[in-house]
Length: 159
Image 1 (cartoon, rainbow, N blue to C red):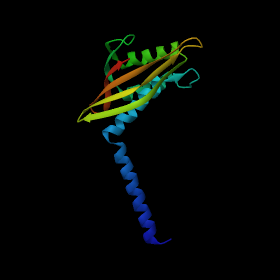
Image 2: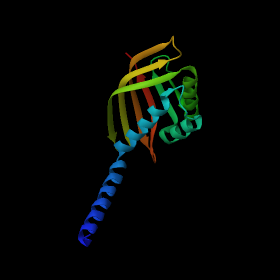
Image 3: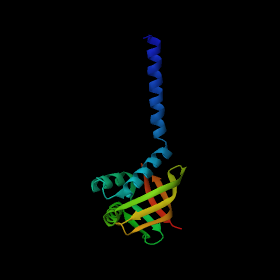
Image 4: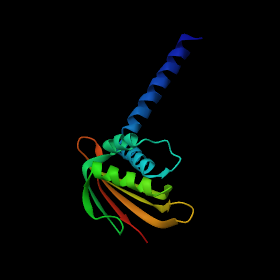
């Protein structure tokens, strides 16, 4: 092969890799991945092989040490620690056979060291063959950067 062609291919590859790296480091992209992680670990099916340690490790990277929770009942209006939230999610998984959030819209607004994410969609839960429930839900996540992006507040509103 021509030496110039090899050099050009190498240069293009390096530039593309650098562009992808810097794109993934943008605040919106980091926040987007953290929202995906949170939703992935809240949702479940009984046949899931996910371990509770995976849940704890993932949420340690996503949630602040203390998170303000607000919403319509049965959501508690309180400030919970990360461990308390992990336990609440484990309890939800123990009580249900599946939990799902079907997202219809996601908006991310970043202002310096704070961000607001609004998720709209439908929450579905089932517990055995006789209980299935679904409701439209809007979830608002507040993020703060110190030093990494973490969720500091979660607010849910139903219909």
